[in-house]
Length: 289
Image 1 (cartoon, rainbow, N blue to C red):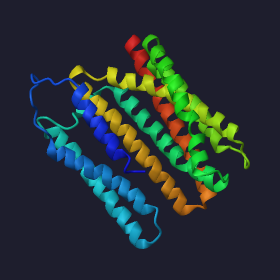
Image 2 (cartoon, rainbow, N blue to C red):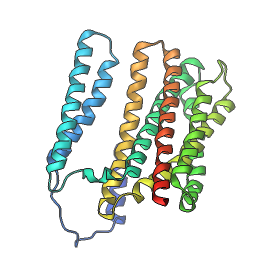
Image 3 (tube, rainbow, N blue to C red):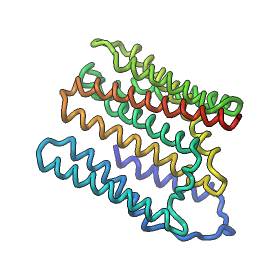
């Protein structure tokens, strides 16, 4: 499962060497090693804290608290270093734009929802419904299909209308799909599961393209590369947090209950994303006024 990533990574690296243009005229900039180290410690410690919390026992709780404290201290140190670095790993002025910041937070909340769902549903399909691992994987297929179908159209609409409105509508559809998955009957048919997964995919596809456009278009040209990095961090970190949440619920509740609670938490996270997305509309009104 993990070894397959090695040849794929080699192929991707080889293609990048051949396809990505080399520009020797670019000025070599100093790298923020301190910022990179602190960010890795902060994000890694936060995930490790959530993982340790999933295990029972006082020692594991102490470990979770230690990791949590490390994450907070490292995060604060990272911010301090970024304020003082000549070439910071992440220039904090990129968050001066409220529309960029809200789009980033919206992305984080949505990927938490996706991360929860991607971890919780296999347990539901295999442990509750009794599907094999292969069938469980096939039941996920409508989700990416929905994204593929919806994302290009949503991107074109975002060129003509407010990306915040389109992404908010997409989040609404996504929330409906997640709620439908959370309310699956005890003996759900495969077609029913696929239909609900398709709704999730369509909603997420309608959200993702306009929201990405919102983030990148509200960053200055010199910060465009940093904006892409923030987008990747929100995606990866959100999915990691979502997976950690499922682990926490699995350690507290019985598996069947934990799965359904996790799915409803995903719905709540999506509603939070909707609130954040709607709040961007005020920025559009102020800009228009």
